Length: 96
Image (cartoon, rainbow, N blue to C red; front, side, top):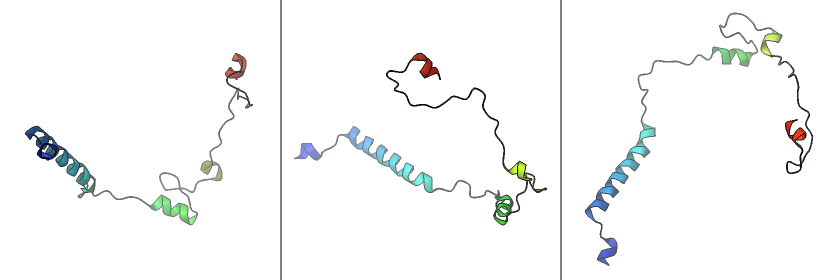
């Protein structure tokens, strides 16, 4: 019975090192490293969007309708989607 529950000195040391690492990893996320941080978040853009008064990144002018929604140009050589079996597809079908 003693052979099953007895640890060697190396096994005891390894156990204590692993226990210490586990405790450190468990406690580390709880520590607030930015206690003295004086940065404040600017919510003016978010508040303007909520009230329906969007402004540009500088915050000076109203955005026009064209500035709010960006138009994306059509891609040249756009591929056509079609059903195919990749096991029996030809080289031309795979390239398209």
